Length: 363
Image (cartoon, rainbow, N blue to C red; front, side, top):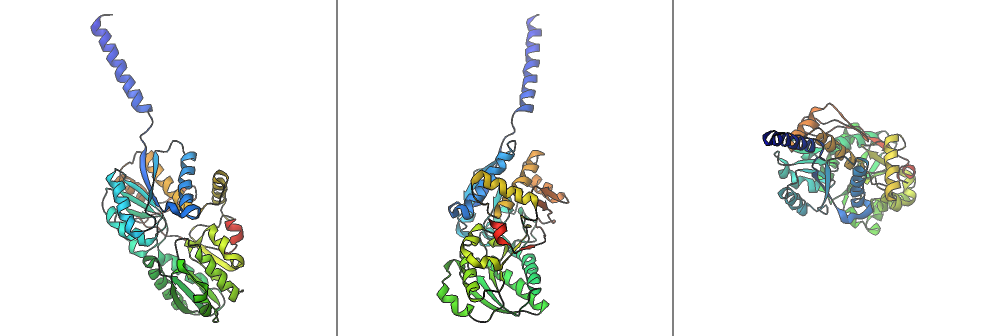
C-alpha cells in the first residue's frame, strides 16, 4: 500500500471515529436551578432537594444537572440569586418560593434568555402574561373560588377567616376572590381577621376565637407549622367545627402540631389524595423508602417540572424558546404524577380535591 493510500485510509478511519464518538458520547448535562429555601429543613427545603435527587436516580440518563439556589424565600434575595445564576450561564429554573418572591423575579423572564417553571406562587399578578414564566398550579382566583364553593355546601352561617399578612401578593387577592365568591353564593357571613401566622400567640387570639363561629378558614401559605397551632386552639374552643386550610398547608408538620384538630381539618389540593391515586401513593412510598421521612407536597410539583424539562431536553430542545414552544404546543403533558395542560400564556387550570382524612394522608 502506497503512502498516499495509507494516509487516505487513516483519514477515513479518523473521520469515522469522530462521527461515532459524537454519536455515542454522553449528551452534555444542562444546568437547572432549583430555587428554594434550604434552611427550612425537612419541612420544605430538604424534601425538594431530595425530590430532585430521587428523580435523577430514577432517570440516570437525564440531561438535567440540578443546582440548588437558596433565596431563603426572601423577596429581597430572589432577584439577585436568580440573576447570579443567569450570569453564570443557567437558563432554566424551577421555583418553590411564595408569591411575594415570584413577583419581583418576573423581569428576569420577559425574554428568551431564561425560562422558569414555578410550582408554588399562586398570585393572579403572575397570570396571563406572555413571557417565560410558566406555572404548573392554578392561580389564587381559581383556587379560592373552588374553596368557597366547597364551603358553601357545609352547614353553618358564621365563618372566621384568619388571613396571614406575611405574603399579601397571595393572601390579599385570595381573600378578595374567596369573599366575592362566597357572597355571590350567599349563606355564610365572614368575620375577617388579619394576623401574622408565623407570630401567632394564642392569648392574643383566644377572645376572638371564643365568639360563636361555625367554621374557620386559615388563609395562609408557605406551609407554616403555626397553622397547626391555630387549628388546635380553634378546635379546643369549637370541637365540632370544620377547619378549612389552603392547599399550601399540605405538610406533615401540620399533623404534628394540630393535635386532635386534625380530625376536623379540610385540606384543598390541586393534587388528589394519595389514597385515591396509586401513582401518587407509590411516589410517596418510594420517597420515604429512599430518604426515611414523608415527602412534602411541593415535591409533587418538583417532580412534574423535572419531567417536563427532561422530555424537552431529550428531544433536543435545549434553549428557553424551544422549550417554551414544546411545553405550550402539546394539548396535555402526562407526567407520572398527573396531567399538565398549559394555556397560551403558560398558566394552567385545574380541579381541586378536598381531603378530610389527614391522618391517613400525611402519615
